[in-house]
Length: 236
Image (cartoon, rainbow, N blue to C red; front, side):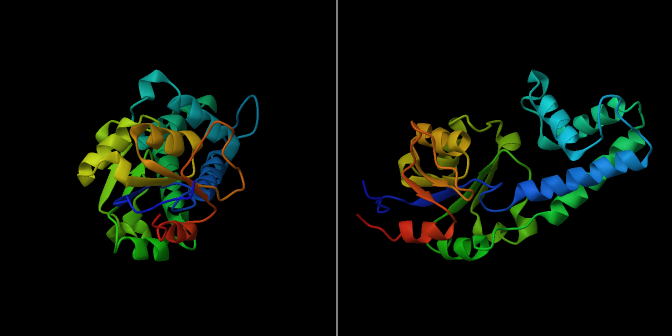
């Protein structure tokens, strides 16, 4: 069935890997943190101090029930504390230094995708646009805060993707039924499936050539945000 945009009244966007390249910035920041640990003369008994290892420690912390509803900042800080502990250290000063270096590098390295600003500039003239994210990146730092009517942050509202209630909450902020909101994101479960369960229309953004698996369905698929402009011109 062809995409029909006639019932769309607002747009909801995922953040990381949808509007901006979070992974590249995070990787650069983790490399900086690993280098700092090594520069302090600290080593692991079972392997190298590396960005991959720091990412693994962070994922272990995030996967623990005690951290299920903690902020991204708290999870990252705890992961650095454990990393230093694994390397035989216990200095709070080093943990704070790691966290500061990581955050400054990460935010400094964040970049919008090439088309993001121009697409949002055009769309926000017609549709209320909302950010829905589990993350902590600030669109204002990237120059697009003025295009967003609301910023729905999981840690603030207590609802985390893939819980479809975060999308129902978003629709309530817009004073619209979920069926008239179109959500755009790159994650098959957190964006496409979860927003769909809430009753939103969905667009899967596939920047890396990884189509939805069988059984997954979005109302439309695009390879860049520019494709959204063409979709929204379709009126039955």
